[in-house]
Amino acid sequence: MRKKLLALGLAALVGTSSVIIPVTQEKAYANTELEKKKSELQTERSGVDSNIKEKQGELSELKSKEEKLNADIEKLDKQTAETNEKIRERQAEIEEAKKKIQELKVQIQEVKKRIAERNELLEKRVRSLQETGGVVSYLDVLLGAQDFGDLVTRVSAVTQIVDADKEIIKAHEEDKKLLEQSEAELSSELQNLETALIELESLKQQLKIQAAEKNKLIEQVKAQHKSTEAAIYELEDEAAFLKEQEAAIAKEIERQKQEAERKRREAAEAAAAEERAKQEAAAQAAAAKASSPKKSSSSGSSSGGSSPAPAPAPAEPAPAPAVTGGKFMWPAQGTFTSGYGHRWGKLHAGIDIANRSANVPVVASAAGTVIRSYYSSSYGNAVFITHNIDGKTYTTVYAHLDARHVSAGQSVSKGQQLGYMGNTGRSTGKHLHFEIHDGAWKNPVNPMNYLQ
Image (cartoon, rainbow, N blue to C red):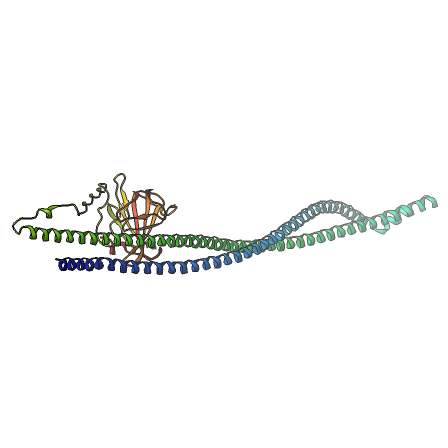
């Protein structure tokens, strides 16, 4: 009898060991892989931080270049203003010169008119002299004197007339020559001013071209500035995400440790219960055999040592997908509307599932830890979850949700509701955008190769 009990005890011990050892090995393997992934994330985050510093250095250089270009633009603006002022001065001088030329032209016309009148008078006088014999007529005038006094008077009058004619002609010729010379000088000045104006206009146009070139260059710098800032924001967001994923992996390690410990305890308790049941059965059989071999034992139907059957899990809401086997389950019920691949010049990094029904549940495709639960301009309401499946890390993304029911750091089970399907962010209709990443985020794979 004692030998039988000893044999049963050894069998129970062997059975218990066979349950405990695989759990311990699985726990060690999973934790090693997660620790490795955590170390990789720390290295990657360090690289991202280095890239951020590099981009910040580029941004500083761009700011310096932009400041220099702004100074050049200001200098060009001042030169343009000075040139415009010179142009205005030249224009004023040209207008003044034009007025003077017009006045001189009027004066010249008046002088020419007087000269023409006097020429006509002189011509008449010359014709008269020719008709009367010229100098003889003057002699007649002189010889016709009545006395000496009259002769002197006549000689003086003739002399004055002749001298006056000569002075008139000389004065008119000099005036005409002077006015024509003044007109020529002013015309030359006008031509010089117009030439200077053309040169200044050319300089102004040149300055405008230079300013346009500088403006174009500074717009390029601003675009680079904006692009670099956007890159920094993206890197900072990536660094923050890696930090969050690192924290989520740490929680996933702890969760799996607790899960492994729970399984170990359950296995140990089950083995102990099995051992107790075997011992009780053996004892009852031995007692029954000792008392009467004909008496049947009814103790086998006793349920005193057995644990009660677990209560059935509550059924999922009707619209929610049923939990399936495999690594990942479908995260929502609906119509498959778009697959993984390139479209419109960029990668569509996941699949789209649409459903017009109200309050369509979205569930975790696999057990894991929530990395991030937040709103973004592109994804709208989104949830990111890290998973460790068969010692390998995955990341899933659930985007455009109407509402989120989980928070960062929270552990979720496969099929647990995360929120409701929606149309938030850059979305044109109610649907779920679902992604699977091999490892950390930004390493997308085709979800259709994993879903079951």
